[in-house]
Length: 65
Image (cartoon, rainbow, N blue to C red; front, side):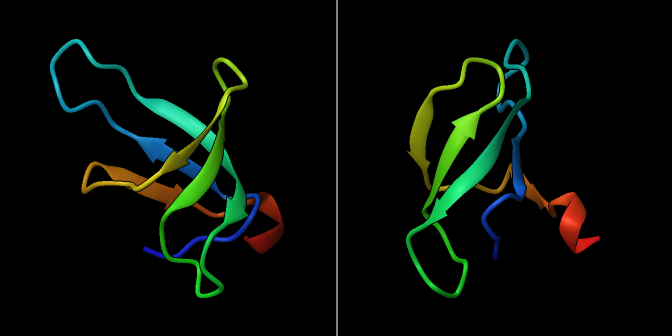
């Protein structure tokens, strides 16, 4: 998994009642774009360091499309 600052990280829930969570990648910890990522969550504005699992995907920012 490789990402760029500004990409969206979408994490699907792993349990039936879990919702999907979307955040914006605000900082990379590795120059090659591999995890972990510092993510600002859209739903609450909080930031957290994320090591995405298999239920996660990267959506490129609009500027890269």
